[in-house]
Each structure stands twice: as C-alpha cells, then as structure tokens.
Length: 69
Image 1 (cartoon, rainbow, N blue to C red):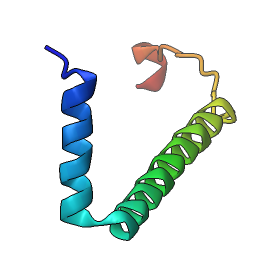
Image 2 (tube, rainbow, N blue to C red):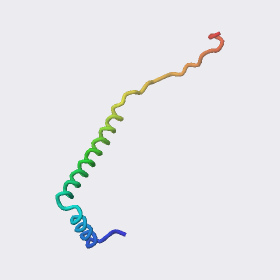
Image 3 (cartoon, rainbow, N blue to C red):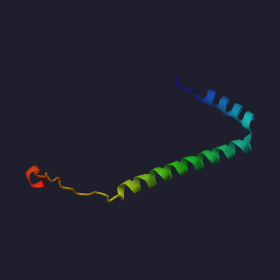
Image 4 (cartoon, helix red, strand yellow):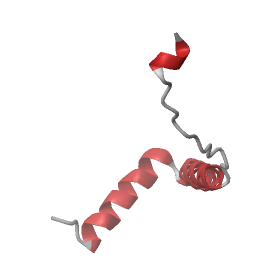
C-alpha cells in the first residue's frame, strides 16, 4: 500500500524538522554523487569486458602412447 500525497508531505516536514534544510541538501548531493559514481563504474566495467581480446584458440592433440615409450 503506497502512502498518499498527504502522508508524503507529513513525512517530508518531519524529515526537514529533524535534519534541517542545509543538511538535507548536503545529504541529497552526496547521494547523487554516489549514484553517479556507481553508474560510471558500472559503465567502465562493461567497457572493459567488451574490450577484452584474450581469446586463445587451442587444439587438443592426443599423444600416442606407443611413440612416447
């Protein structure tokens, strides 16, 4: 069950009274920076996976037991 608009306004007022406007702004900025950094690191990780050219082709050769003895 989602809270309605009236409940959201009450929650916002309580949060503003507890933290204050300036501190709430700092928390929002820090949270935004953290999300931006997370998205950037996820994008960089995907690019590293795409850029890997470490594919090695190999052929399995069965050794003759008669020739090795």
